Length: 193
Ligand code: FNR
Image (cartoon, rainbow, N blue to C red):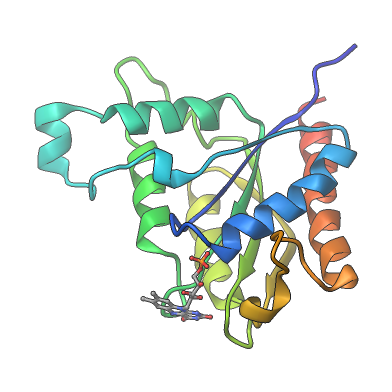
């Protein structure tokens, strides 16, 4: 039997009640139903200092970065919940990506990103659902070798959209985000066949 495709899911928010963490967890069901192994990580568990080249030169890559990079490397696909801050990517997500593009001794190329496949989702209390930020996340990831699938979705009015168990109340929204995760698995599987 072939190994299942491995999807790493995470969100660009470390907030305990993050809507974007809830969203990727809801979407993950679609990836699991499509046969993938899905592993969720909370960036709160991988605290990274604000990137600074002097710090990197003096101390190398922090342990949290090495762990995050290893996780990225060990998964073929990424399901990312992307909060929108001022129309763009959150500093948490950008900082994590920036650190993960820094090479470890002996590392060839951007091994944590090159040839990986990603799907982007967003949730926001606002009416646009955070989709303006996805443009920027997409551009950043594509610039470092990630294939970002065209399918994406923003969930607006997030305070009303989720129930107390963190599920999306609207069945159509739930199916839509799970279909994106399923698509991510299908495309990732084909690219890794
Ligand atoms: C926001 N928020 C926000 N929302 C949005 O739809 N468009 C935006 O441009 C912004 N800008 C913004 C800037 C800053 C500095 C903050 C702190 C917040 C609101 C944001 O979507 C909201 O806080 C979400 O709850 C963040 O996502 P998590 O943490 O719930 O995943």
